[in-house]
Image (cartoon, rainbow, N blue to C red; front, side):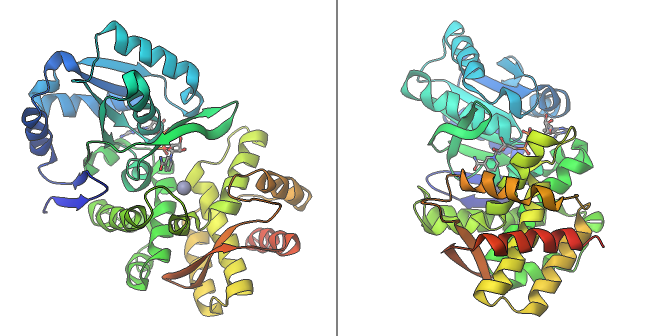
Length: 361
Ligand SMILES: NC(=O)c1ccc[n+]([C@@H]2O[C@H](COP(=O)([O-])OP(=O)(O)OC[C@H]3O[C@@H](n4cnc5c(N)ncnc54)[C@H](O)[C@@H]3O)[C@@H](O)[C@H]2O)c1
Ligand SMILES: [Zn+2]
């Protein structure tokens, strides 16, 4: 299998075979010294991914490792302060580079810490979850949460390079893998129909060749990023499934002991917003049925009680995507074609939540 190279906004994404060689060449080319390389990991990427990285890239064997606990809770300013201090204590300077080895939490946090320390040092991403391989590690958005609100503090800042090693998925829990798969489904729906046709010919359990899906999924995300690097309009196409999905994710975080993962909530959002697409922008019913069937059978059903619909809609009202009391949706006119900035009546949103709920009956 070939190594894939995708050029993004001033940096490249290397995927697959021989990536360890490319990492070695990259570090040598820029003459990074051992004492100027820092690797940020969480407890899982340290355990499951760091050993392979270190044994394949000799220069990384004696570098300084910074570990944080796993989970979204540590993606905050307190952790940044600790990391800035740790970089300072070990004389990090403009010749240093931070290697973010982990999922989206690590690339968001590490990218933010690197971009703000001493007005910015270089960083690179080695994503280790499916979600971070196809989404979080590319696109230049970095940041942290504030008081439980996601990504409130942050900036646009690009990595030097992204290295994707699909083998790292071997240790990723199935639930996390499936959650990342929701973003791949989204990418297949918003760009060109043949991606959807290829993807929907396989069920999640049967997918073995993740590299191929990662290749085209990164290409699709990158297409929208390059068209609109600062997220001022066109990139909103990537929000398909996310207006309702984000609200359900927040609702679940506030109310469930075992809350939904981001991708699990986005899968529900995709179903509801597919329903809205049929009602509002003429997505053909046959395409709606195809999408709903595929997504509903790829994910476990989540119980949305009708008494909670208005709570979910209230959360949507506070989402930064929805301005001036209007809800802002990206909807599909057909598979592969979408419209951004679509508003929607509250009653229809309730109806879409009921549509999802009734799928289980
Ligand atoms: N910047 C962006 O454009 C962007 C886009 C999407 C999501 N995000 C952010 O990404 C984050 C979610 O990312 P995520 O889903 O990768 O979560 P995550 O980083 O929390 O990783 C999920 C879990 O998998 C574990 N893990 C990571 N790699 C592993 C491996 N190879 N084997 C075993 N376990 C492993 C982690 O320790 C964690 O427990 C959120 O904070 C979200 O806001 C950012
Ligand atoms: Zn998402």
